[in-house]
Image 1 (tube, rainbow over the protein chains, first blue to last red):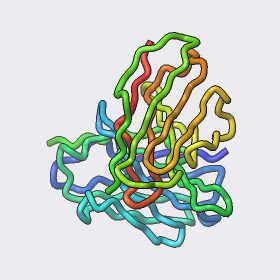
Image 2: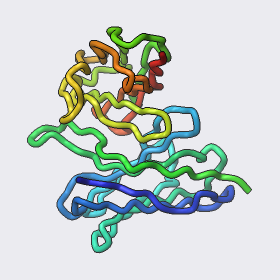
Image 3: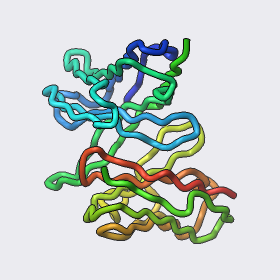
Length: 123
Length: 106
C-alpha cells in the first residue's frame, strides 16, 4: 500500500521560503510516475502546484510566477517543495500526491494523497 | 487555463436519494475528467477517472458520464458516508485545474 506523508514547518514568516518534504512508503519513486503537490486554503478549493518525475523533470503552475521549485531524493524515497517569497495568500493545507495513470493511456489522476499539512504564513 | 465550474455549489439530500452534480469546462477536454470526494478534515479521494471509469474499491452507486465540456457525477442512492464535498478536475492540459466543489449536506 502506497503511503505519503508530508513534513515541514507549520509556520512561515512573510517573504520567507516555505519548505516541505513528502516521504513515500510502499512504492519506490525510482519506479516511475509523477509526484506532486496540491494545496487548499482554509475553507476553499484545491489548487495544483506542480509535478515532478523521478528523473527531476518538473512542471509547475504558472500562477505561482516562478516561486516554486520541486526536487526528488531517490535515495531517501522523498520529494520536496520550496515556495519562495510567501505571503498570507500562501496559507493552506499542502498535500503531496502521486500522479497515477491508466496503463497504455494518457489518462491520469492524483492517488494517493498524503494526509496534508497546514502551513500558516504569519509574522 | 481551463476553468472548471461545478453546480450546484451545495445541495441538501436524504439517505437513499439520487444525487447529480455537474461540471463544465471552458473548452473541450475530451474525457480527461476526474472526480474526487473529500470528507471533513481528510484528503480528497479519487472516485472516477477518465470521466466514467470507477476507481478500484469505490462503490458502484457512484458513476460518471460526459465528454467534451459537460460532465456529471451521479450517486444512485445516497449513503450516510457520502455526505462530503465533491470536486471535478481536468487532466487535459497544464495547469491541471479543479472545480470549486459541491458540498452534499443532510
